[in-house]
Image (cartoon, rainbow over all chains, first blue to last red):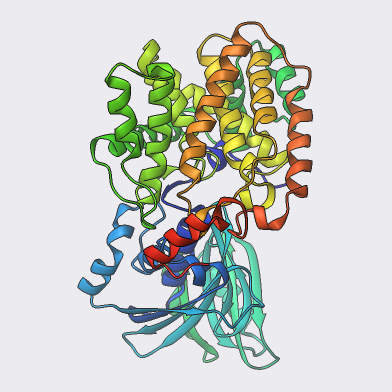
Length: 223
Length: 293
């Protein structure tokens, strides 16, 4: 059984009104922002289930966008996120989708278009109590909560890439806690998450990128 | 050091000769692999947010995002001050603080979920009014939050605190049990009395459904936070007078969970029944144009 801290009961400290529709939505936006391959220029949020029905009254829209701006669930700037995003030159829109019903009730897809032309779409689910997970990246099913310090490697699914990644990490004295590769089909694009107890140093990024099958590497500090 | 139910918690308190709050602090340090200073500082921060949210609703009231609530706490404080309070200033202020936190929550302000955002007014409502009336220090209040946390932890572990799973009895009901237990410790009760008060609260809130108008954490949630605070204070009063309960907390928690599972889905946070389906509620939702329901 998972450990319940007293701060899971007296907490989280959060911007209201809902731990699932506001705080959890914010975590989805925040994790998306962490996974983005470059500076975000434009973002489109597709909302499903209960998110689609009640997003305005729960401030789900402001919370998601606040996450994209890098604000955490207890950051009062979330309320002003529309204005702050405009000031930062980020275009944003929200599209409720009532047709898709085969999803977790509190789900959002976030399409991020970056300054360098790269795009990434992540799907997140708000799990209650202000917790959330990323369950899809560009259509590939993944499972990421941001609980540990992590590194995402976007790569071709070819022999030797994993060995290369672990070699680079070992050179930088990183102790791997968990490592998981997610892919849709053999030989296509794969997403590898490496999780560690300590922050993974930036110096690993250029080293991992030396392999020609690696497209992108993103360091993600624990949430 | 850990405990799985109220019985084990009371055994730990008895063997170490300490309060529920101190036992919960020790559990957090050992199981959470941290130190006392960090744990206490985090709870100090929670208390400070609770105070700020309760007070700001009275000094600077705001309309909620959904437009269903706003300004209630200030009205109650003003009425209590006018000298014709129906239930005395202590209870009136507890209601004002509890409802005030919900106003701040519904207006996208900073609150502490305790145990949830929808029930976040109950614990601060009770503790802040006791501090005001009896002059408890911030340190005593912060310790009382660990006592409340112990009760909430048992509910999370052995039942549920999600309205979608167990109805409002699992949210405001558990929040009220947490507040009652903390109040009993603050006012000098024993660990057994704390859990007896918590048991009485659950009994009195048993079966309460979750039926938020428009699916929003506003109405009747705000009213129920006031009721939860009142319920906690009544249970503390009864318990501190030496009245004990036939049914212990562990059994009451099992009962609450069993009842929660039998509440139909329409009455578990889906806004498909109860108050949410009333003619007036549906009219209000159309009027605010949120596109819900």
